[in-house]
Image (cartoon, rainbow, N blue to C red):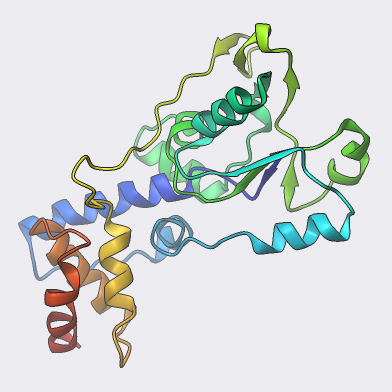
Length: 232
């Protein structure tokens, strides 16, 4: 079972990468991200799904396993399967993807299933429950049943929309070997916590400057605040 939808953070990153390239050519450009607001927000402002935990309590459902989607759906499914010594069947046409994410995938010629499986950083909750809870979950607007558990010998597989069965492999995001967070999110976090607050558009502009310059999360606090306040 999965909360929310997937692929938003990954497609949001693609939008920001494109704006970074534009900014390199023209540092005076002011990005208009209104068309991509949902995906960009999913990348820059992740939210813990505490509401899902509360929902499960209301439904009197205790998951038999649970993990958040940080490294991609395929990676997290493999984590659960390995730890529980089971296999799984994941159905491609059951994976929830927001319409804006689908549009961005089309614009960037990205396979939307790949974005959901390997993009990561969506921080939705992936969990398993006993089959007795099927009726309580199957039509809930916040939850999607995306597959089922099998025996370990069957392995972990994706069943495509055409009915083909493909072995799941983990190709999600991994941290930089030196421990630096090279994703843009860490940089923007520092910008958005400046007091007094600055306009989101200015924050994006400052963030792009830092990203283009190769500034990583451990050095932002010394540089970003003065720069952002100056632009504000």
